[in-house]
Length: 458
Ligand code: SF4
Ligand code: SF4
Image 1: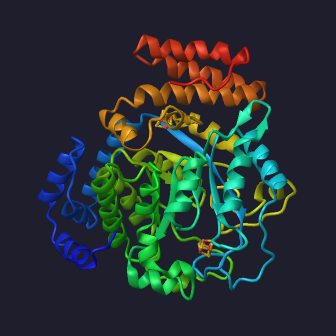
Image 2: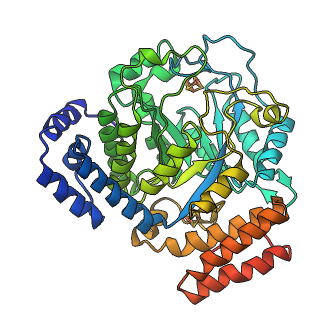
């Protein structure tokens, strides 16, 4: 996709002149989940009035509840290689940083996966630096096979989302054949000038190749793609508009836009000086951005990582976020190292709670932590998924599946105390399901799971 800089700057200039009446009109249409325009988005990005901001949060919160109910999907990243030929100025893995680099052997991949399965995870994001020699596509494909083949008690990874560097149609085709879930690629920044500046002397500095990666992935048949911007590199308003334009470009060309959008904010990392970035996002603007994206694309999942604090994660779950990582380690071999008390990471985390703590906190706040991966396994992907999501019938699957996978986690990996807590919670939540068939599906699953059946879903 060609990013239309002039058009974005024009929209931002126009957006600055926004009036109260215009905002109220946009929010009214958003409440009805009507598609809002680029100019509407630009206007929302300039809201300053506290009452209007609050009103916008309420609208985003309503959309979030209507579309996603109270379930929150959990996942974890798995870093398999920190070899990298790039020089991204914001990343601890950049090639000029001297440290002992490595990639996991298949035995080590198995060990990491078993630790993640012990935490209950069924959905991973496979992460690797870019290095065509030390970490080629063959290695990534072998990792995928190993992950899908690794069992721990009853646990198995059911969906591997892959976050690797932009590549060729042929390589995307091979990833697709391995049965990956979402192909994730962070644009980092859509501002071409900034993009070139923060990726000096490296392959990743090819802006055009990077911004057309999703086109190649979808040409290769990958149906779910997930985008992200590293907020803090360039003007966040510019990024939001460019993100929405790229989404529309994919919708027009392939019938479906982003499956997910991630919203990482720049974090401290080895030899990364945050003071050199003039666009760091404060909490207030960050909250606005999340709510505006939720309003603009109600049916696109939004992902928040452990870069954010537990408090920020809890708050944004109300206004837009639908997936969070839990118990993450952002270093190669990080899960095993963590057990041994050592930490190696790509960037610093702000939420270091264990998955169990995350789960207990979510339940306390009224959310259903979910390990569900059923859409991908029943072929509800790409355009088909969006069609169902837009009818809001996905609810009828998400909630019972979330409750079932939560109980499965507690039966397999919880102690007696956690199992009791989860079972009580699942029964309470099930009692609120109006549809008898769906309610009974959940209640029967409690007995089936305790009797040893696994992997039950709608
Ligand atoms: Fe390498 Fe990715 Fe870090 Fe850039 S962001 S230095 S490509 S690991
Ligand atoms: Fe996600 Fe589909 Fe499961 Fe809902 S039913 S949580 S959309 S995989």
